Length: 110
Image (cartoon, rainbow, N blue to C red; front, side):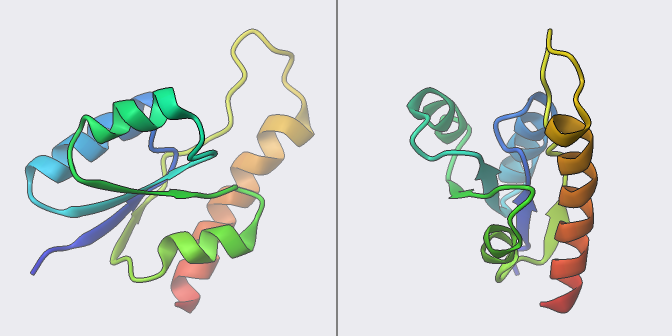
């Protein structure tokens, strides 16, 4: 039986390595991205192998619910970053905390 994984923040540095390993092990991988219209990022992810991509927002429970539907294991590695930017609580800290809580609350309800 193939295990179905969700890897959040699929185009991030850590996530791409996680996805690469999961695909090499023959697992089904769904990855979340902010936008499927970001061709450069989407194309790079597709080079890793047969990955399913879905748009999700850390602050949108409906998108998170869609992302976890039918998933066995969530690997939540997404976090908003802003290299060279002033850290604002509403831009970075709140989404990181709320995103983590939402993924685990919603997955436990499914």
